[in-house]
Each structure stands twice: as C-alpha cells, then as structure tokens.
Length: 333
Image (cartoon, rainbow, N blue to C red; front, side):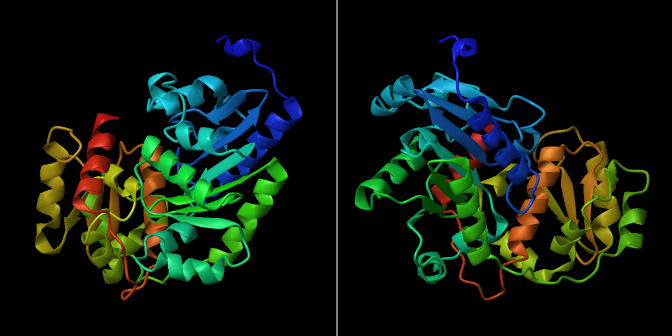
C-alpha cells in the first residue's frame, strides 16, 4: 500500500494529534512512549508508531496509516499485525478490533493505582457507575489483549471505557471531542491523592555519586522510593505493571553504598549489571548519567502509581508466567 496516497480529513487527524499531544504532555496520563491513539476513516487506521511519544504529535508525524481490511484479515488468521506493519503500535490489534472511530489508550497513574488492586472490579463498579465501562483482566499486549476486548464487546456491546488490569485505560468514541470528554470524566472519578513521603537526603546522595557515573534525577518525587518504606515493600513483592519490568534497579543500604556504586561504575554495561538507577534506602535515588529519557519517564510514572497505594492495599501482582513473558518481551525489544 502506498501510504502517501491515503487521504483523510486534515482537520480530524489534526484534532487527534492535538489530543495526543495534550495527553502525552501530562506525565500522570502517559510516560515516555507509552500509550497510543488512533483514528479510523475510509478503510484506514491511523495509529501511533511504535516507540514514538504522543507528546511529539504536533511536531512529528507519529501516526502511521494502515489498511483496516488487511489488519482484520491478519487478526482472523491469528497473525500479529506488527508482523506485517513493524512500525505500528504493539496495541494495533486492540485498536483494530474496537469498532469506534477514535481510540485512546493511556497509562493513567490513578487508573493503574486501581487496576493493580485485587479488588479492582468491586472498587471500580461504584466509581464508574453510569458509564459504559468494562473490566479486562490482565492480558499480554497484542493479540491476547485484543481477543479479550473482542470478548467483552460480545458480552456487553456498546462499551467504550475499558479498564485494563495491571495495565491502564482505554476510552473510545466516534469523534475526538467525545473521547477527550470521556477521558476527563473517568480521570475525575478515579483520581487518587498520592501519599506523602519523607524528604530525600540530598547531601548524602551528592556525596555518594561524586566521581561516579551516577547523578541525581531532575524529578525530586522519584526519591520517594528510597525514603518511603511502604513504596519499597510494594515494589519488592513483584511486578505490578509491565513497564516495571523495563526498568532494572539496584538496592543499596548502609555502609556498602559507596563500595557498590564504585563497583557498578566499572562494570561492563548490560541490562542487569549496569542498571539505569539505584535506590538508596533512607536517602533517595541516583540515576545513570546515560539514562534514557524514556527510562526516566517510566520510573517517574511507576513512582506516581506506588505513591497512590497504601500499606494495606490488596494488590494483584503479575504471576510467574506473566512476569516471565513481560521480561522476555522487554529483553527481545
């Protein structure tokens, strides 16, 4: 298919870009390249390219046009769309099976704070009452998630709000304005006030990182996972969210900190021996001077989620099989 010959209404696609930019610029809704947006028109699915940031929607061409007939044929054959369109979002299958013209998927931190709870369906029922919503138990991105969404629509047609267990939020509608209003309504209903954490020990962190490949992060809020015992206990128990597996970390405490930092600064770089950040218990966090912006965004988002969970919150962690799939998928990327 010649992508340059595909036509759509400039105003409508521009409205989608404006929404994507607005949502992508809010770290409480998306972090880095997470989340995706799409528009269906004239047999074409315009969907965010893999690895692009929605925040860049007004500056770069982040949406790629795909043929819907071909996509849906792939799905009927059980073929992952990215095998045919490698540049498309990992969630292309989900966008294709949804009948709505406009679809927006976000990693809203307040929604995720509800979606990682073991009692999420009960809690959400009260908060989303009156909205056409559906709970989707955790499914791996791609074909598994698209099939779960298809099943939900067969059971309850007409739904256009989907809370994805341990993952995020999907809102859909016939135009951009409807989707934007729906996102605002859901976000308002699910808002969670973050827990306050002890202040970071900046003097200790600066001393610890002096002369090493480590430095302090620009996001002061990130230090809470080093100073807040509740956050540390939650993260230590397992994976709550797929993005968590993309962030390798190392814990430090006591007098071993300086020795460990020195050792890590000299090690050969690899995903586990050379993590992008270190959690210093009681003091805060230091990050690699080579850390990627996407990694910083993911860490900040994870911290925001954990700050919205209590010590006694009943949590649903990914099981061994789900965790292994997420980790292996991240490693292959």
